[in-house]
Image (cartoon, rainbow, N blue to C red):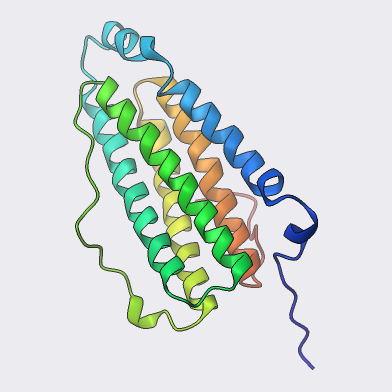
Length: 196
């Protein structure tokens, strides 16, 4: 006899907003404070770096492109009809957090004098392989793992440390998404002591 554990059962007793959004909202608020709501950041950045923010803008735009892809991917999962209510709610919550990340990144690119990348008209997702809820969760977990790795690689590349700190904050949110999706799949949510 197989006993299935609903990894979202705790969400029925604990406010989903407090349990998941609480940390995410804190991280998003931190990122907003560090990026979008710091009008002096662009001016100070220009003074410190001789006005050359090209490298940081390129990194931010790469992150923005990945966030836009994640938004689209969660949209595909949400519209698949394969997700149970609690899982669908979680997917929409994660999509909302990616939208917050994208908004902050786009505003920061603009403040640094760059032009934010836009969402592609069409993304190539393996929709033919998404036949069950587990398939959708596995697909999302793979994207979140990729986001964690991308932010991990980007953080040390920023010339402006405030941007690195904000990117690390987003990295933390992506890592939480990945861990929760792994747990929902029945996998160890934190399989290693270090992320690589």
